[in-house]
Image 1 (cartoon, helix red, strand yellow):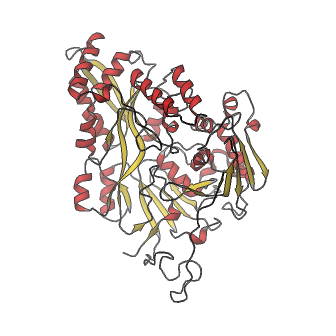
Image 2 (image 1 turned 120 degrees about the vertical axis):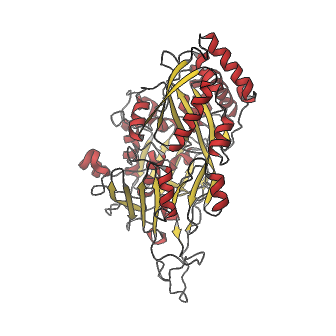
Image 3 (image 1 turned 135 degrees about the horizontal axis):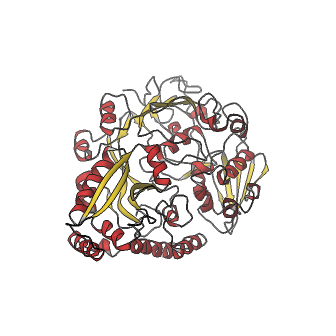
Length: 538
């Protein structure tokens, strides 16, 4: 079915206001609001990202930067619906196992080169190349592009990937099975194009400001490690005339309270609400304090290859003893939802299943946890000893301290260990932990974006969970008209095997200056683009 491109923003030309092209009158062309003379957006980045290379980026902060610097086939409107990106239009065949994307001919790289279908072929082959070792290679397998699984296993060359440039401006994708939500997956950074000549010339240093060639609304102009990242308008961007924000400055501030102090001083226009401060700030600054629905889950991973945590009773006891209501109501207090399943209820067309322990009272959960620990020879006088790893953050620390106390009450003694973000990711990815904090935000709005992490061969399966039934249910769900029965069974198996301990489903809590307009509060994926923002006079 052909998808009609959404209406593009039309500039209002008014001789009365003195607008010809651009925004010479300092008035927004649609709303008429008076614009600030300086269109610079300052915001907090919580930690230095391991990479902003579209095929290597794996964290939320890095993805936001990548979305500004690069543009994929499709993008999103403020409410999360699909909108044209480099592709002006697209269509799938009746069986939804083949899609064709028609690229706009005025899309340009920041060096002036045209963006073509060949750039996408190059990037997608790069994403599945075992030599590149993309942390999101498993995402490409989720797309069901033909031959992707064999390529990832090293059984076929990347040239066999089911994607081809019919001509410079037509990209055709062949899938191994029907996938109706395939277009929505094209918003993910892993599918963004990359400039082959630049990568071949500069290697791993191609993402440095002086080397990078990008095709998004912005280009990287400054990167000071652990301090700041600056991106400025890319004059070659096809829709540059409609862009209002001239520069976006991301300041890397790991301490949320320090970030809030700088927000109060107007050095930042956006930051996160400090842990536990939402209710107070909502009363004091109601216009600036926001709680938005999010497609995210917060959970603890159990390393199932650890000699201690191989025991189901221990993983179950650790999960049961967590009082989720204390975490959501007392520590966070911003509408977060206690989680007894991995997939959040905000996921499109997903019905959250009941779990046995989710229907119990906390008193009964604690009683059962004590009984399970006793079966394994542990008690308050002879506690189970575990180590919990989390990345440096005041919020994660507060939650970890609270859960440590909950565990202590049933006979579990936890040692807390924190590491800065890059080190934490490396440690967790290498499996050098017993229990580790984790969070996952959906890469697209469908339950498989969560449940695929439970596949035994998923790059993101840091628990080392291996259940052949789960693998089969997830893979077979991709071609079902109604995959929900499969998803329900997977959630039930997770709640039986306990490879993870779901703790809460997120809300997006943030502080945003009232003069920053265009923020996509209703996008549950929380994908934002500087090109859609503007600063009003203040």
